[in-house]
Image (cartoon, rainbow, N blue to C red; front, top):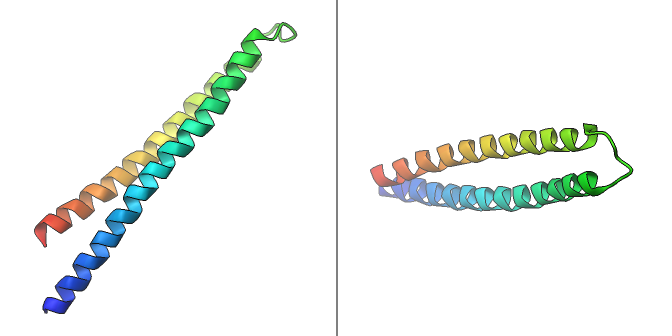
Length: 91
């Protein structure tokens, strides 16, 4: 029975490490993607050839949608981490 608990604890610990890495990676990707979108927004606003507001509006909308998607992914990862932490505390 003790071997099963050790294996369970080892599995939960590895899963915890995996999801912590996942959350950090997703944060880094979100910073990268959103900075590229912000750069595109600033360039489209400062370009005199683009007289319309369509390009900035599209870029801003896409940026918002990407932010929401990354936020939802983060919430799911955080929920999994909370579950793993509860299981680790319960041992």
